Length: 222
Figure 1: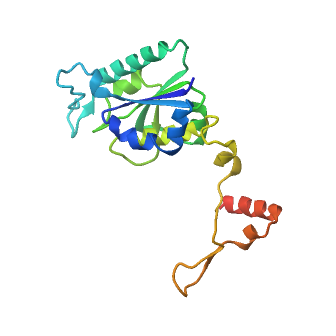
Figure 2: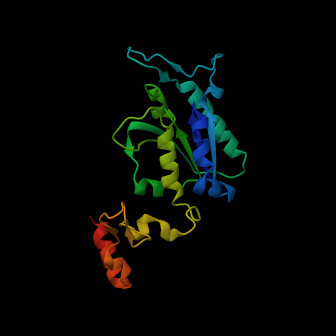
Figure 3: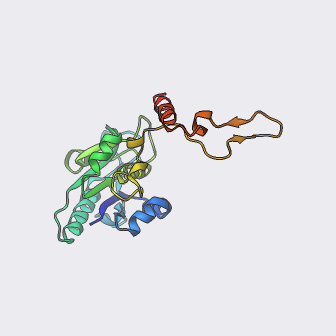
């Protein structure tokens, strides 16, 4: 079965272009992953499809309510159960107070069968979502975004890279090769006529693989 990503958001259309290009498009076609964005508004008990309300205690902005998020997660769990296989599921709420996403977390999350990703908006999400629905809170950095949708895309790509076949070749993982400067043709590039040439480091043109590997290790530490 493909690994499932179920995204809870009030803007499901945000994901359309990115998920239907390049690696994500191929991975879904090959059934390595399955992605579905669920509109939280479809699960509200409000006849006007309202999913937010004013915060208790006062303050600016609106807060996403717990009811539609709980209803959505229950629906997703039921849909998954119908597949006839017990799924290892992890529910994640994106939050500035969450644990920082890094390579180790991405590798750990890749071991699950399903990730349910809750994307907040406005001034945030009712804290009872973090307390009773989410398994963990995740942050992608020390800055504030308008919603969790970009964070969801970042996490999905970081996790998917650890799914066999997603990259095509396991050797593409930076965790294996490390990160170092790369160059391609031409060997010397003229940014303007008569100007100074931008050249490729000579060691990369030497054909000496030991020296090249040593150079990459050294530059990768910078």
